[in-house]
Image 1 (tube, rainbow, N blue to C red):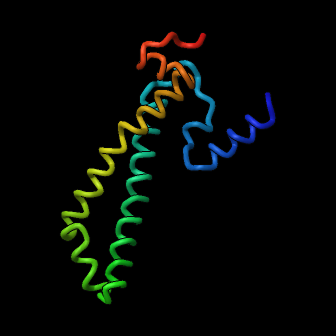
Image 2 (cartoon, rainbow, N blue to C red):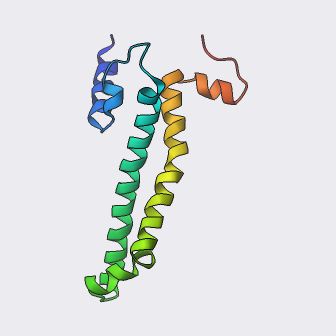
Amino acid sequence: PHPTKESAKSKLCKRGTPARCEPQSPDTPWVITLVYPILYQSVLFSAVLTVAYVLEEVLVGAWHEKTLGEVLPEIAGGPRGLATVVWVLFVALIPYFAYRETDRALGETRLRALLFNARPAA
């Protein structure tokens, strides 16, 4: 194996995608191969985006000289609104990660070839 490809794979494994690091046998269920990584990454990235959103609102509130106690209840319209934002982010990220994981499972160019009617690389 090429040393650059090995180091790239080790970098991928360190970025929080444990399903990619373990070798998959041919009889591994598709739920483990595709669904779990898709849901895991959607949950992880929706949490990261939610933290960034809350931090942004807190900083904007600080800029307008509001206290943390004044800003937190206003974020996304309260706790129900914030829960709705988190749910929408989670659901919106599923197709993105589904595409990425399916592309990875089929091979780098095969999914694009299937979607755009090109001949898949052999």
